[in-house]
Every structure is written in structure tokens, then in C-alpha cells.
Length: 178
Image 1 (tube, rainbow, N blue to C red):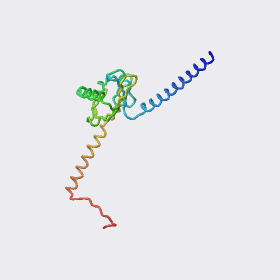
Image 2: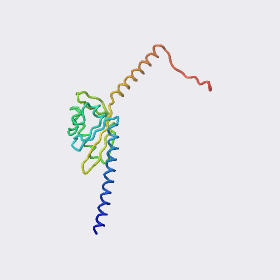
Image 3: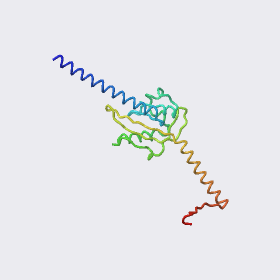
Image 4: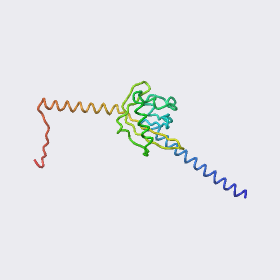
């Protein structure tokens, strides 16, 4: 009987060890993806308390990880947008979906540690872990994209204006069909 109990105990311990190793591999994979992502990734709980903040988020927002963990998301949202953001989060928390891009909400403005603000694009996901709702946001700074778009629009206006002034157009000649 003792021999059977020892065998069952060893089997249970082996299963626990295998599960522990699988969990460690999963955690290493998760950390590898999150830590080296080029976009800012942060996770917060249902009370908007930040529980995860990757290296790209540190660079984007100017905060060190230990400065934001345990703080509320208000830290990176301009005061004028906090009510709107709270309403968006409340709406999302009631939805059945597990994720969505926030583009249809309009671009979100975020705030850096130095107080400067920047336009951003945010995708957000929701997951329940041990009866706790967690939200993960992937944040991308749109400053460069917006500036590039403005420059392209300005260049197109200049080209049209130059064409009018010089009375030059453009045309194509198909040598095969003449």
C-alpha cells in the first residue's frame, strides 16, 4: 500500500514539475514578446491600476517601470480627457468582445512624464484571469505619421500650384497602341 501511495505521489509530483516547467516556458515567451515589442504595451486592472509596463512604454512615456506599477492610468492621460477615457473603458468592459482597435473612437491623446502630449493609436484587449479583469493596451505614437501626412499634403499643393504657374502637365504615351 505504501509502495502504491509513493508511486502516486511521485506521479503527482512529476505532473506538477511538468506543469511548472510549461508555465515557466510560457512566461518566458510572454516576457520575450512583451519586453522586446517596438510598441508600448501596458496592462491595467479593472480599477485602471497599471500592473505591467514594457520597455517601449518606458521610452514612449518617459517613466520607469517601477514609477508606474501600482499607479492609475490617469498618470498618462491628460486631465481634460480622463472623463472621456473612463466612459470608453466602462463601455468596453460591458461589451462581450475581448479586444478592439480604438481607431473608431478617434485618436487618443496621451501624456508623457514631462507633461507633453502626443496623438496615439491604441488597440485594447480584455481578459479575465482568476476572476480579475485585465486590460492590455498597445499604444503607438502617431506624431511622425501625422507630420509626414501634413508634409505630403503640402508638397501636393505645391506641385499643383507649380504646374498651374508653368502650364506644365503630365502625360503618358503608350508606344504599342500609339
